[in-house]
Each structure stands twice: as C-alpha cells, then as structure tokens.
Length: 131
Image (tube, rainbow, N blue to C red; front, side, top):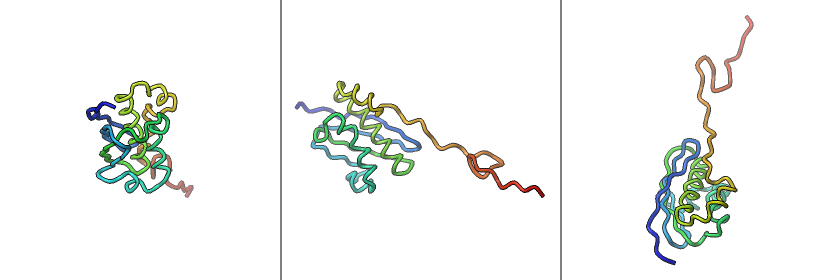
C-alpha cells in the first residue's frame, strides 16, 4: 500500500462539528487527543463511529485524528461518523456508493427548535388560567 497524505474533512450533526484527518495506519481513532474508547463512554456511540469502516471493510487500514467542538456526546458521535464517511470517499472513491446507500454521507438536518417568546419553550406554553 502506498503512503497517503493526510486528507481533511468536516462532519456535522446538531451543534457538533468534527474536523477529521485520515491517515494510513492500523485503525486507531483519536478524538481530542484521547482514544475514542475513552472519549465516548456509551457503546452505541462507539458503534456509530465504526459504522463507515464496517460497511467498507476498512477497519484496520486507516488512522483517524479528530477534533470535535460543540454539542453533546451523541451529536459529536454523529458528526464524527459523517466526517469519517467523507474522508473515506477521498481516500477510496469506490466506497461512495456503499456509504451513500446507507445514508452516511447525508448530513442529518434535525436541529433543536428555538424557544418562542411568550412561551415556556419551543412548544410548551405557560399554564392557562380562566380566572
């Protein structure tokens, strides 16, 4: 395998933004300087992150270095998955069809709804009193 240069991509979900760097290596994933097993404590978040590698059978071929800012842990996991999927396309263009078919290249558009004035939250109203 020839040595690849680092490719940079960005993945987003909710308020989280993940800047992902992909390098040839042995399958290590570093998130904000920590191994991803230590950063993401929930097993579901780890499964989400590994999804692009499992679908393309590239689990032990590339190393990932990511910097994630904003959002919560599940949003950050989704952002990292999005960034990894985009990075894999740059390195191995033939994986695009598999990733697209499984919905990993589409940015999840769901965002938190804003609070409206005269209300308690986005949808919840203050209690109505007749008298």
